[in-house]
Image (cartoon, rainbow, N blue to C red; front, side, top):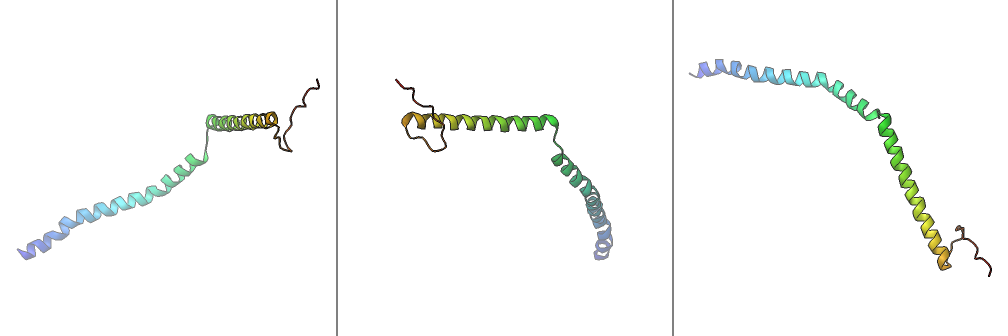
Length: 93
């Protein structure tokens, strides 16, 4: 019985080992393809995506300029203008 188990053991384990080795070989063979395709996807951006990104940046800059202008107007109104502020001169009466 012991001999039968020892003789049958390589047969049963052979499928597992061969399957594991084959899977590892496939993984190793496809890894460079996966790495390159991921790099290409990350490196290429469609024109539409680039336009959307630039549009977001422009809107963000415009919003910041608006906030800065409102803050400057408020400082001028309160008489606490900074040296860099351009305040309109009060009209003489």
